[in-house]
Length: 259
Image (cartoon, rainbow, N blue to C red; front, side):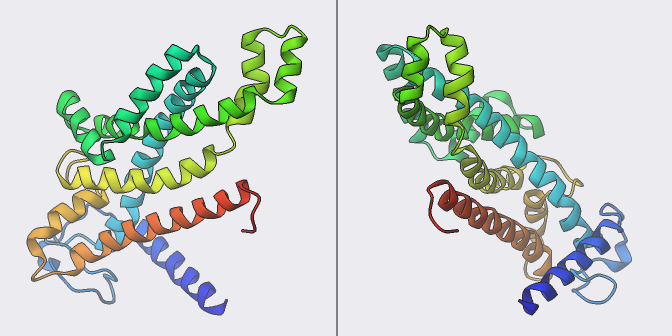
């Protein structure tokens, strides 16, 4: 417990130091300095403080991931709900479309979308969001089938409730239970995907301190400055692991198991 508190204190201190430093301020005379006092994560090939760039880069990576998840969740809920309440032929058509999209890895599907829309920050968010839609849609569709057969829904139908009122009051609120679990885990997947696309030069462009683009810049200096790639990569790994662990805990709570 004390170790965890100590690590949290150290992490908070590093974040404060990083926030107080300009991530774009270059100093050629301090280029490629190893980690040490003054530059706790070292400096990159332009002399920029890596701690500041990693800390400020969290805003870029988390914002891109959250935006992609919000897009995927919104569209997935609408499509999944529509499939669960639609006539059988429409449900079959939507389900087959979800299955086809699910066969593609997210990054590959995102690359296909970007090939059509072109590179750019907004297009990366759009591409990752499109790639994640089937995950949300299939779960919401399954939940809709369960809820629509519940006794309280059948009773509401007998009372003459309109289809719109039935959906908004009884079906929709009760199919959103798994959404926090999916969104938390999906956030980690979105961060990996956006970082990968940024590494390929399709996301935020340098000098923006985004973790994927930082790794792309660092690959040319691995032999002389390993720290330039280590800390952005570690930030991605730690963030995704934390989000995955949180998602698993939420899943156990949703399933009624001990956290």
